[in-house]
Length: 138
Image 1 (cartoon, rainbow, N blue to C red):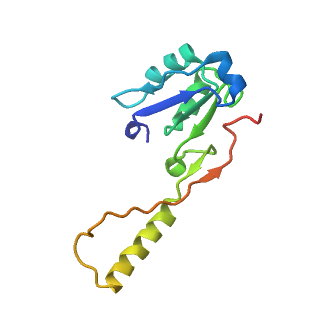
Image 2 (image 1 turned 90 degrees about the vertical axis):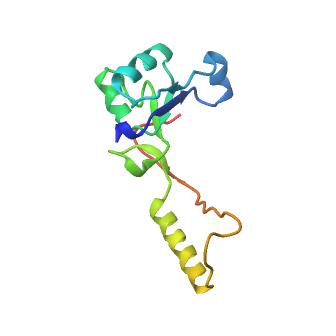
């Protein structure tokens, strides 16, 4: 869903010998929904090695502009929950997170805990790497 994601950042490869060649790139941050009309000019101006973001449609936009993904830039999706096709990225495991949250609430009910807890709690699960065709092998 393109309209829900308003931030995309891109950066050079973190390898030290690549950093020397080009340095850091400015992230693309926009208050409105990201569109090809906003992204493609930024891409042509900065030419990142890898685009990192939440909007997988960027791959389609790049290919539509004649850019070869993953040969010219790679694309890494920070959240594969809403992916639209095969893509390299992080699986944040929302189903497992939901299951752990339910287990937590059930445990609270068994212990007859009521009301707002004295201390806030958070549940964190490690994301898993998902390989795909949008990042080239080095």
